[in-house]
Structure formats: structure tokens, C-alpha cells
Amino acid sequence: MAIQRKPVVLVCADRKMAGVHPFHMAGEKYIKAVVEGAGAIPLILPALAHSQDVIDLLDQVDGFLLTGGYANIEPHHYGGPAAPSEEIIDPARDSATLPLIPELVKRKIPLLGICRGFQEINVAFGGSIHYRVHQVEGMADHREDGELTLDQQYAVAHPVTTTEAGRLRGIVGQTSIMVNSLHGQGIDRLGEGLLPEATADDGLIEAVSVKDAEAFTMAVQWHPEWKLQQHPQYLSLFEAFGNACRERAKSR
Image 1: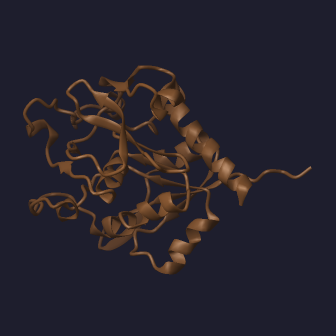
Image 2: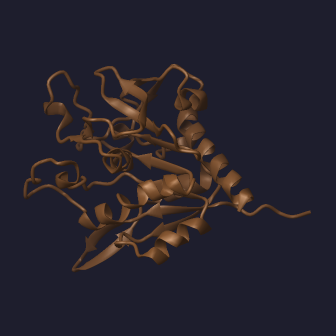
């Protein structure tokens, strides 16, 4: 009897300086979530402007994870003013991920976006970003308190309401779930062809899917990779992603 291999998931890298040298790296929490939650093998994809050879590599993998990150998308990608000089940016990641997102959807590759990855999907489909959510009238402050411990920062902070008959509601099986909140930016204008999957009480969209995507394509503003075994709704999201990756692995 043939043994089904585990699916392979590309995990996007950030470009960061370590000492005087640039490194391409991905957070361990995302890598472990791919292994423990999705049941897949993670491979880190460097944040390089991708050649056609790299694009063609997509046909050899079974899923793609767009991780969170400390750097924000440069505003010129969505028509915003230049970022302040003190802003943390990652132009290499912007150049690597934004052009790949429509290609992933086109090639029917399961895609999961988290926090920055959620915002990247919105921008890739022509949407825009609130540069500082807490400065927008009527919006809550969604940022974490850097003085707290990590466990306190990643503790559930507020509910989101899942969209009726939406894909996310079908995954988590609930009309409302509690999520953590560690972001200063958020969706302003929703990208073309994206569907809201969950919203916070202040109206901020916190999850989206791609309307016409033939494969699993979901993104959330919160961090479901954090201790996902302790949070059934977080785990269910990674399990759904992993199941989609396994279906793709069987079909190719």
C-alpha cells in the first residue's frame, strides 16, 4: 500500500539584519504551527525578488504560509504617503510576496495569511491599509502592550464575529470567537474579490477569503499560530489549511 507523503508548505521569510549581515528568517512559532497544526513539512522561502524559476517551483509545493512580521508594508504599494523614517519596513519581503499572491491563487495553491500576511493579501488585490488603526475615529486600539509578558500579549483580547455562511464560520463552527490582538494596522479599503470572513466589534475586518479561489485561501488579522493546541479555533484553522494541502499533494 502506498504511503501518502506529507504536504510541503512554503513559509515566507523576512529579511532582517543580524549584526552587520542580512538574514532571511521565519519565526519558529509559524514553522511549528505548520508541523503541529497543519501536519506538513515547512520550507522557508527567501525574501528575494522571485525569478520565473521560483514561480515555477510553486507547482512542486502544496501550500503557502504568509507569516506575521514586525515590519509594515511600505505605503506606496497601496497609494499611501511615505512611511516615517522610524518605521520598520521590509522592502525585500514586499517585493517577494506581493507579486506571488495572485499567482498562488491562480495556481490553486492553498494559502494562509496571518497578520502582516493578511494585510499583504488585501494589498495584493488592490486594497489599502489604515496606517494607524487606533488613530481612526471609532476604531479600538488593537495593539499589544510591549511591557507585558508574551503570554499576556498573546492572550485573547476581543471577540470577532464570523460572517454568516462564510468559510471561516464553517471551519470554526461558531458565530463568534475570541482572538488575540497584536497589530497597529488594519484593512481600510477591502481588496477587489475579497470576502469579509470576520469583523471586530469596532467594524474592523479581521479575516478574509478570496471569492473565486478554487483552493483554500484564508487570512486572519490575529495570530492563530500562538499555542494553537490550547485554542481549538486556532487549531481548526491550521487543520483546515493542512487538509487542503494534503488534497493538493494527492492530486499532483
